[in-house]
Length: 89
Image (cartoon, rainbow, N blue to C red; front, side, top):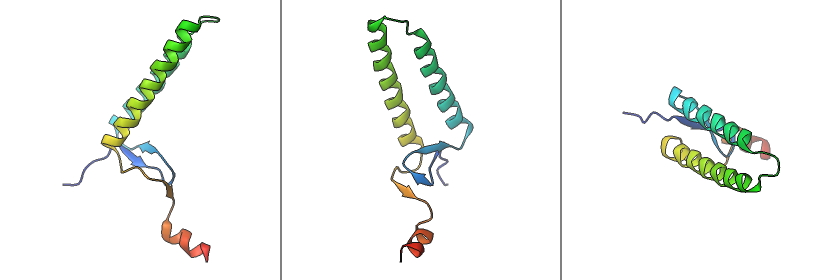
């Protein structure tokens, strides 16, 4: 049985794209969480700013590890390698 990836590796560059409802749910939850944290920051409240930055970094690392566990193997991709090699020569 083939493993069903929540995140597919991007065709160009490094990273993933959601391919299942679970992947889209995780990504949308992450975006909503980041916007919620950004809206909590007030002007001149540096304690909350530093706390929000640390929460943002933690959430981003958590998203990254979820993508690693439930997605394609990460590596830098440059599209269709055979097509790319034909144009190099």
